Image 1 (spheres, rainbow, N blue to C red):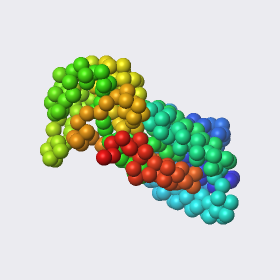
Image 2 (cartoon, helix red, strand yellow):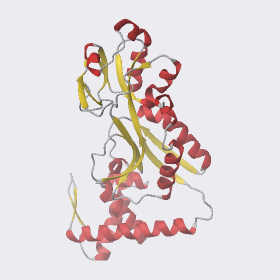
Image 3 (tube, rainbow, N blue to C red):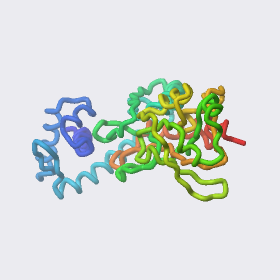
Length: 305
């Protein structure tokens, strides 16, 4: 019995929640994972988990062994990283999940630059706006925008993003440029459905007073880039992240308004499971991402006085 491979199989089964998903992640047959677990329990002389057709549940002995097994594998990976530090070369597969609009417009060039700096590394990127289950789907980390709701994840802040209210110049010429947020309530709004309060736009006045306006929804969509295109076409107003609208603003296709008001801020975070040791590949990418974006993202240049 290869004890380290058996430990990896055991920990992966717990993280994945099933033998099949664990086998897919490890790149082996499900029967091989099942055999390793049986050999491990026989070697230890105790049952580590109770298996049914629907779920896996750790026994008391299994919970204790899981904690020790994670620590052993983490120590092994750190020892291997230390031994190979002279080479400074990252290799293997790094699996990342990222939202579509930010991923393709801002993260894409950073990912390409990261692979140029690490040619032996293989990236597996899932661009999706759905909330990816990192453990079940075998991702090393995710780049997410917004508040961290899953307490089982660890987050590292990358930077904050400002929101911008904008519409096409011709739209403002027709409807008038607002001086207060309340004036926006009578205008057609193009709303992103990825938030709980898609039609309630909060803000803070220049003198620090909080407020909320009720948007008149004319269009909803799950993609901010599409809504921005609709705004450029004159279909209404948008409140979108700066990284989506900055090019349209810089070219004059969109005109921001009420810039002296503070609209909500979003946070870009790199998140990963508490149960998974952060690999050297993932740690290097997070550091590269933070340094590439910096404390003042380039896409917010148009908001600087």
